[in-house]
Image (cartoon, rainbow, N blue to C red; front, side, top):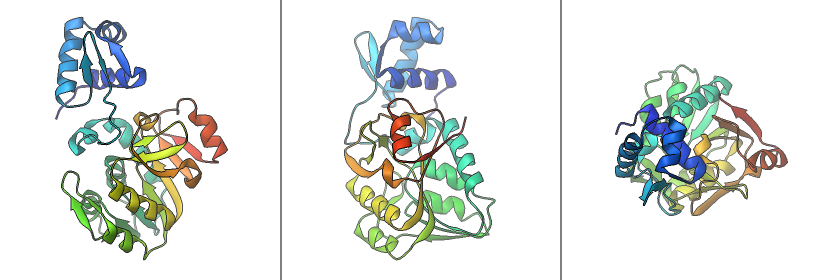
Length: 254
């Protein structure tokens, strides 16, 4: 899957507006109508947008996430900035849990030069990345491996996580709704994430700007359960007030 910077910008515009006409996008991006239609066709084929007569909108499913390859490409630059910021705050010689998600995988890559880490994960991609760090001990949860993204889910993973109490949980999320709830799509994954939160002394959430106002079906937690938020641009309304009320420290990797 390849998307060029113009297509990513088009996607950002659609996500910020929820829907837009071809004419609006052409004017905003400074390109021709033909170019917009071609880019929309490409993004629709990838399942990233939905077309309607004369325009385009974001997919609105609350029951199914995008595929792992799509999520790897989407907002990759922002996720890399977030990952570097998180890694700069993670001390050497500490214990961590990283959960499922392309943002936590980016964080794992940013931790490759840390020393003395003990990392528990239910994400086989994270385990494979951090296994390249000789100063990092990686402990992998047992359970059912989800083929589409190599995430480990289910009751066996929940029971495994319950054995530990780590310094920091580094978690990703699919959506943050305007009521302050953190949401995801798979109940089995959510049960593991909830256990991770309960068994960590600090919880750091890493979420790029596209996660704000994104709906998903299952509640993982609320902002009150998070200590720090790392994102790649200033959160939109009403989130600044919600973060302040929940006493969440927000770090923007601009």
